[in-house]
Image 1 (cartoon, helix red, strand yellow):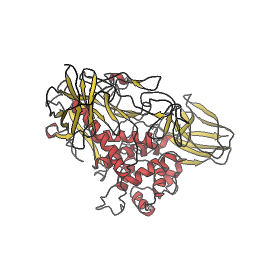
Image 2: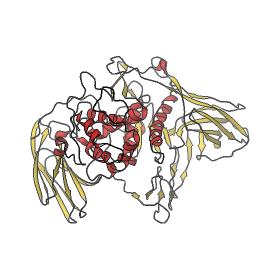
Image 3: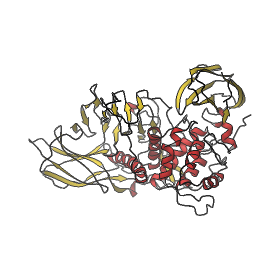
Image 4: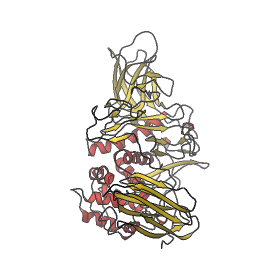
Length: 586
């Protein structure tokens, strides 16, 4: 029986459900010989033509930038518009000549005043510092032609050479886009226009461009918030560079990030800014960031931005089987979402080299911030029930695996850095026959040649987590209890789920593990309250059933002999108290 457990809900966030990309298939060496579409940087063949993977005939995929679209011929066509009226044709077309202009590009970085235990934290606009726009795209535009292009260096410095013709005004643009890896910040409420900062060139040889935050002391000045896009861009670039420094061979696909001053915490049409919350959208493989003044702004919340980039990393280089949904410190969650959200939180502390997570919001009372310390628990604790089901426990365990700080932490004798963590995420975590939880990650981490399993066990014990021995949580009784062995077929069993809890909590979920026989399988779950069943094979959703509000749900599907399968049973009972569910695999 599942007993009711204490829940403390502090935070709401959105992670969209998993989808299967039917046009994307892995190849051992993508080429014209085996790919009719285009080959991306991760050696994947994309059969369907779209703006993110544009190309055909086995050629390298291009990514269409704002204002362009992928034609049926597999080429990016159209004009690229920028947010202040400039029009750019192509990506780097134009003439390179004897004229040149140089300078530096910077933006306002606005810190928060949040510290653990603070009660009046806010964004510190008065303390804003100028930071360089790194690896940013520079373009010289005359009329509608790009006549010169370059990139900024690590200090924001650039030099671009160009040749002009005619008397049309020449303008210099610093676009919110990095050259490598490609990250582009665009306005989803304005035709996906890329955010720029620009100036007329004339006869000038030296031009410094600066994106200002536009804060007047009580509100933002209209059309003067360009720093927001560049702040988002810089955090995304920092996240990618942290992994590149640890594993130089890593290649990231192009990323489109949508920030707009119209992006508000309401759900609806994304093109109108109704994005619900800052989130990674699996269906479009894009990130959306809040920016509505008076509602919520996230552009200067670097940990929030890095957290969402962490989901982008999972989806593109690793894997996440998280069901998403509401979550927060103190919750007893389904271990898939506990790991997925803790991963984003811990990763933000890792790549930013800052364990203090801050999220600044804007309500009727004005600006305010909340957050936590990834290194230290507060007093009183935000983790009343430490386990692999607690986002807070998993967050601090992951960060301690990474960091070099172990003062007053005798249980922490590890300082792995990002390398072994990356190797685990792109290797065993991605390929696990189980579902992605702390169990699958730890099992994969212990398999890395430089990792001490004994030291990992000592660290986990601090959060009441047992010595995880395999991807099904063996030797942690709580995790292993989530997995029911259904390998002896036919299987018939039952479970008591905990009504009155959210469907993404521990109380409302159970996993059943079996191997395919090559025959067709029928999986049936029956209960009085509403339940759902989903069949996974190494992270791929094979089939699911959630057709009725109560009664019977059934899946019938062929299976591959010897292949591992996991059935996830999820309950939606709203009445507090336990209720019985029967399940069979025939």
